[in-house]
Length: 402
Image (tube, rainbow, N blue to C red; front, top):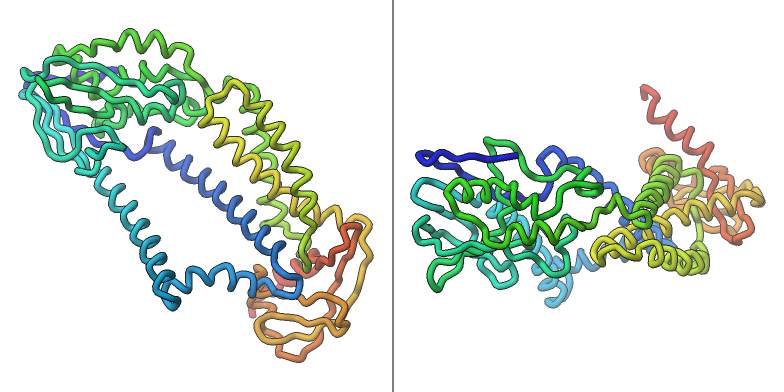
């Protein structure tokens, strides 16, 4: 891919928020949303299992969200923390908005930049703000490559094009600037996770680099970096990390389907924590061994997500195991306010349907009305509610014209 420029025309480049092409970025956002759903489900499971058995799920949720509520009604430190978190979120959105409106205008006389001032902070190592650089003032150009992430796709964020003008230096990340009216040079998902060009080659094909080349400005160490980057790491070519990605989708998919879609059982007590510890230890060994030879960033990211998926998948699997040889208990419960049901037999745990997908169905019953539920108690020693028949009843109620 080449970008050419006429000596009598100007090209306006925009700063991208993602290393991926626009269409592929949407797919990646969808995948990230699914992973966040997986992590949120794991967090909810751990909170519910850590709660006292006498507490209902709604009480656990209330305790979990009390910190957020105290940001408005609590003490001064709590309010300051809440304001700080909100300010940080707004600042992040504002920075993304400013970055999306940054422009580089490459014309006949030079480069005109309109960039957020915070890009000039030392942690970003770029030249921010509004500035102008004439072609005749450029003495030399070189490309700085990151030391630890050069061979990863994320390393593209840390390359810097350094344009020297006398004693001053202009520093720009050349890869993130794209031509909205030309071919999108950024990566696709296949290149992000599989084989592809080296980072140095991707930098070379970036529109800004092509425009500089058209003006006769050569990057001194471009050929050297292209040679040293030939051994670039690719996630899809690493068998260990490839296996981890497959396992991530297997365990994550099972958890999402069995826990959120099928939901055949609802635990009424805290599940044992020992199985999670027993699974975590060999899982960590597998992650460490299979990740050998991969960069630390990819190894840590994929390994962390896989461990979370495995622990999350263990929860619905434990409920199914507990139901294999479980004792069936048909119990009568009395309804109370808020979709909460108390067993007439005080030895049985209460049932809280306020967080169930059919909350409206369970709240329709008057306090004091009696209902029959099927409970299971298996080898794990915990009570769980058999939802197979109840789910069908709730779906039929929602599907009815009334």
